[in-house]
Length: 83
Image (cartoon, rainbow, N blue to C red):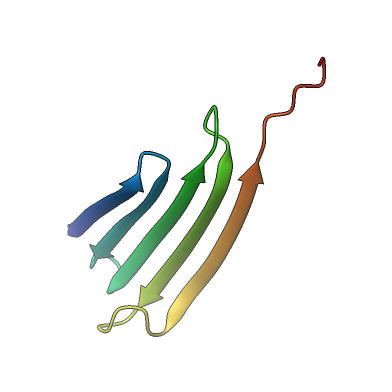
């Protein structure tokens, strides 16, 4: 039997500046914790700066004994090449 608990949080500073988070706990295989934190600074047409932090941990204490951590930074911009 798989037991999964998940919580989402989101906060918008302005319509174009936000922070979101997803936290999950699963005890199906072992005590697995995972976190996904996202920061977005939007420009026009869903372009802009995005920073994402992911962490997966196996422990009774979250975010210790990490199985994997990643930080991804993405910047996208819309170019008008026909102008």
